[in-house]
Amino acid sequence: MSDWKPIIGLEIHAELLTKSKMFSGCPVVDSVEAAPNTAVDPVSLGLPGTLPVINRQAVEFGLMVGLALHCEIPPVNQFARKNYFYPDLPKGYQISQYERPLAVNGWLDIEVTPPDGEPYQKRIRIRRAHLEEDTGKLTHVGGGSSLVDYNRAGVPLLEIVTEPDINSADEAEAFARTLRAILQYLGVNNGDMSKGVLRVEPNISVMHKDDTEFRTRTEIKNLNSIRSLYRASLAEIERQINLWQSGGEVKQATLGWDENKQRLVIQRYKERADEYRYFPEPDLPVVEISREWVEEVRARLPELPEAKRRRFMETFGLSEYDARQLVAEQAIAHYYEETLSAGVNPKSAANWILGGLFALMNEKGFERENIESTRITARQFAELVKLVDAGTLNKGTAAAVLAEMWDTGSDPALIVAARGLAQVSDQDIIRQAVANVLAENSAMAQDYLSGKEKLFGALMGQVMKAMGGKANAQVVTDILKQQLEAMRSS
Image (cartoon, rainbow, N blue to C red; front, side):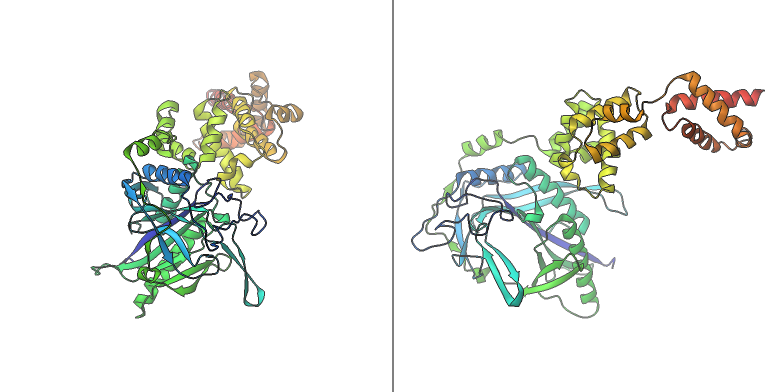
């Protein structure tokens, strides 16, 4: 398959965190938690005689995203009608933007870490970002019937379209994660794909090394996680390559992804843009975006992930890798900074978040983006790191305390006191423990002295075991070396 190259462009639909809908004062609610059809009004239901009014906050949120993605902001943008019939589209058309979008010609740099290769950076071009209204939500039930909920209809939606610059599932995943972080940092979208507030849809084709133009593409919809984006993209790339190689032909179609069965499902054959019969929305004025308005919005942009990464490196002396890991999710960066506000050493805090805490979260099947939902508060985590830095706990004991904090939510100092876990640094006590271990393992000690230096670790382990894992590892190392050298010269 090395003769083939994937060609992927992404369409990202991000619901904007406004209080009201795109074209009316109807409140925006959680479309999963709220009772069906309780947040609707005549405008979002498309009732005759209603007129839309543009939500200024939605426009400003869209401008923020456009500026964060290094886009050009045209001085004029215009809404259009996109005509198609579907049960969750109450008006029979969607108000969107077509020829005059809000933002164009941007870019986003991503860091790609392939599972079997070296990390690299790549710039992905952004074709456009435009505003539109979301549709309702269909729930399919037995007997070929469907239920429709219009709570989501009319919610402000920003669609971001990339150029087909993405050439692997790894790059698609990296782009989605990077963009989601930016949206979260901006405060315009919470990034929860499971609730459909952020939807990433790949358009995929493959290109043979001898091709001079793109082949037919397909689009995968209804992906509810970045992991699904990665898996579905891999599956579609493989399907298309196998189809072309076997003499078949890829048809332009819309696909779905069954996460449980890990397989693609063809939903319908794709419409062409001209079938939507776009034309300017007659009930809305052209929107003029002045340079003053753009600069006013630019001045309100918060610190974005890339700027925060540089600050973490320059201010706290973190490595580029550690800083990238800490800013990858807004929740992680916030947790780290909350930990630092308790006066803990920045490098120690970073090491324990990226090491001990992340390892525990992986073990428990807990997504990193939910770090602030754990029982371990940033203040408690800072206390644990301080205990380690002060020499009260060694690394192994601290990991055990961290695990108990996860289960109980208790303060580390209380756990240490209740279980008597404070690290032992008394040299006389440790010296006696080392002497006992060497006496009980004299053959191993002699083998070490004969040149089998790897046995030092085994002897260290025996001493730590004898001390109940509470000994100061550095003190044990120093005393063990001293007594072994004394045996060598005796």
